[in-house]
Length: 473
Image (cartoon, rainbow, N blue to C red):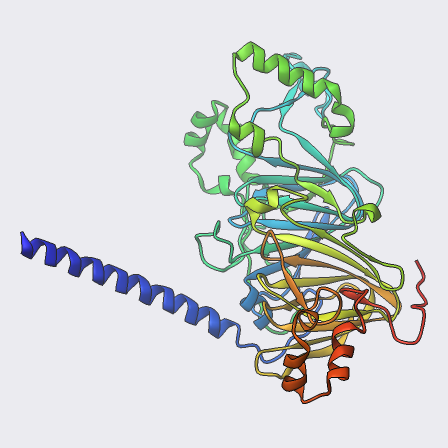
């Protein structure tokens, strides 16, 4: 008996030791990834031309993206064009820089609460006769998005996007490859249910380093058509047409005129009434899944002035989107913020305590500085509209807005971000005793008082010294 106990303890120790070594290796690997020598802002380096638009991607092999575990892309969808259904093994946040349209995100097990009883979809008259006018369309909720919105897309959820407006939709998407939902490697990948790039096609490349080849394929194209026909209970010819759609690229033009789906603006009480009827008819009670994932909001506007978390008449405003404003973010473990800085305003020197930060410039320019743990300046340059850069966790940063102001969107790898500023009424300096500052910097108590209280009525956005900001908006 004693021998068995000893053997069991020995096995436990070996397992714990192996797990510890594995964890240590992972931490060591990440530490090597974050040994950054230089941070720089950049434009996308790769471009995929599509029938109804194009997709631009930043270089995933750059040190800053390797460190943060982020893949960034910008999608441009032309009017009356559809970004085909796909899913990915990691969560995604999307910022709508320009345009408006419709987005569908489907969740397994959720009911189709949108019911079009009068054929409010894009089938033509011939197809209506072919189907005998049997019934209208059933589908899950379709979300209307507009400029300034953040869209949250969970890992594994199939999503599509349609531009029903008169101008291009420009969307900036951040994929968190390092998220715990992704149990694959750290490479960017997407699984398409339709379309795709032909086997011999590759995206047009504009970069000079870190060139990657992406293979976006229709997942149905490799299945046996007979098996798929039996699974769907449809003719084999229909399955073969599904498999051949890979030649249409990833964003396609809608060929039969305007695509009609039941959108939130059109649904109104019809959706709620149908959902109640369906629940009563099937004898179902609303379960926990339907109350959370199935009915959760996926969209939030970052342009709402009334929801600004920080507002300064001289400095600007800051809208923060976290798990409290958009609960689905707790599931994604991501968040975002949008800053509007008046001309010459200074963003208080600070660091992020629990996330990496990916910054995309939407308007204007600023002088940006980032300092690492070694005390070296890793970034000291002007950042401009359309550029992106990463501020790793705990790296201290600050910036001064240009003469025309500065606007940006920042994506974070946590659902509840925390910052630690060194200037202002929430700063670490204000929280320290005066004697700590005097002895740390060998300064007088009066000078320490100035460090603590000269900006005591401001936080984050600091107005320039010597008067007004010269703001334009």
